[in-house]
Image (cartoon, rainbow, N blue to C red; front, top):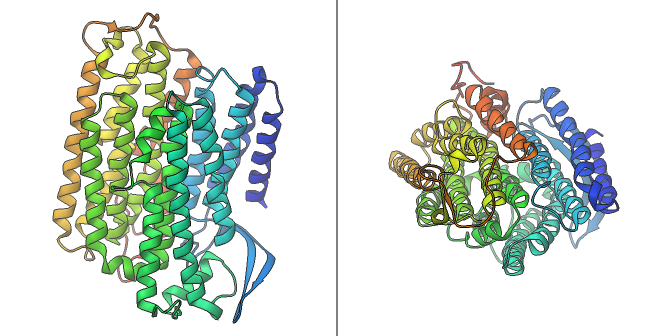
Length: 524
């Protein structure tokens, strides 16, 4: 009942904050958010489960299953369950969610000064839905949480965003809601194709039946055609959420218009919903289809890496630069997943956590700079290092983390992905795809170094009338925490990587033995 307790407390906290006075809402929400944070950390410290939650021989930690009600169809019945639990893939993302929520709430104290109880209540409501996404193991229940995330995010952008906030919020909702519909059709085509081969909508049961070849025909499509049809719909639905090129156009608008704390959650956690779902559905339930189309998927990943980096290079708005960087970083995740090697898939999952921390840090830095200068345009400011030394120092460190500086989490994630993808036997010409993705690092270094040189160094100049000085402690503290986590995971990746590896190993060739890259020991 541990997961249910966290969900219930977070929902109750959101309702309590909605009813609190504005002057207390920020501090109250932050204090209440510490409970799910501590709960998720305690879950991690007590976590000893191995294997993958979607496979029959995997051990699911903190699992609780209760039958809810039964759907009756013409030839079979499906029982909807309350089914929650975590494994080495979902638990790190759960901890990431609770950590970033608390830090984003602290970073909200300066910029959010209107309708505060509503803002902080929506933030906690979004946290509750995100926790549900990463802990639910029944498809219909999972879909409810998946869609529930959209509601607070829409209002957070539409009410507290920039001048074009309504346009950005509507675009975000239309893109992601349409993608959810496409994904839903793809998933239920598989469910009806399985028929009486399954009795529940449990991820484990669905994955087991699909991997055992139990899929039949549906809507005039034979099993093989149906598998490909469903795979494409699922991939497109999740690719919009990631987002991958060419489904990325909603993301920069949403980031630019969203307030800084919302951008932190959007880049840090919401984008990981897409890559998490791709791993769970496309690469776990339908691995044969993924392997057969590995070159196409790898090409999409590399295209996202290069094109996203080139788009970032062309931007002048700091927020847009970081937003397009996220598209590039998610391309690495796709390349690692489709490699179907232990370190490819493990590195991709590690990159989800690493990018969540680094992108959250970068958006916080941009937000603090904007709070002081009231501009995000690179050409409108320079020499900030003299006036904002702590913020600038963290900006430089975060940028180097994005570039893959050794002893930071971005380096560990990218090295693992490159090694895993280079060794792939599934991707044809894997070394060429890997080399193409590695070239993206050069472009990343180019635009980040250019942005730092123009804004941070040289003679001080800001084209505003605002006094620029050291940021408040409550703005600096969350950034220091994130930077510390990035360095800790860069120095000791096995804090989470061993659990991740144990969860993704069963998805690879069973004859392949995964070796711990950091210690040289075997991972079972």
